[in-house]
Length: 297
Image (cartoon, rainbow, N blue to C red; front, side):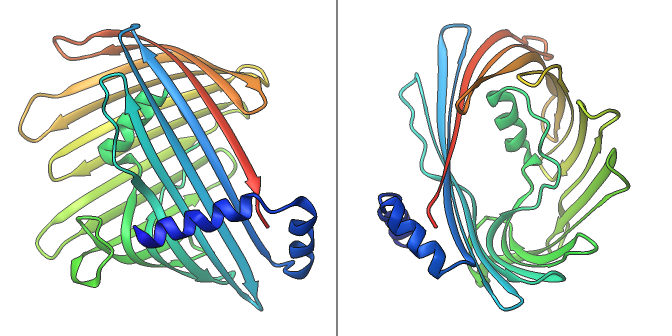
């Protein structure tokens, strides 16, 4: 945590660097780049519950000969109308070094190859909680031409060699601009811990279909998300998921809605979500997103 706070302090200091100073630094370090992006999102459901979150994504990279060195992070804080505020969540916190053929990554990283198809904030976060995020913590080696990645990971997300108890692998392939797939798995010494298959299909330029099948020891789930870019500023989406826990009955959700680009980094969301269990609720969703980024160097 101290290292993270120190890094965020450096970002804050760099953020206030005068433009001319930043240009001078850029001329001196032409192969060094740093940036930070922030996403602020909020959503209200049936006028009685609201949730908001903030994601901060710092990145830095430099080139040393044929080697590329980089850092990336994604950190999240959540608050809701029940007065609950989450701890700082770490989705990505990694350092990597590599070239055009190989790369080595240490830390927490996301191995998801297909993530452009989205729905509402709550539905997407719910699916991420089902394991669709494909995040692992450990040491990983990637072969760029084949999109094959192998590594040693910790099943409890602790970045320590004493916790590295899993072997994981991920492989993805795109046949063309229209179809691609990704398979991944993680296993401890005794059993298969996680596995998944993702299929992405783009029948036409403005339509994206994403299917995900996930397995873990506690539950299995399947989802299907569709996006149609109706106009340059309007996206129509639909999603469905079914989760089958190992110790209870299956549940599911269906969501349909639209996302409009308001400009200047703002997007508005409107949707209806229907639960598929015996007591499933019908929920109306209104949301707002803001995305902003700034180059530091």
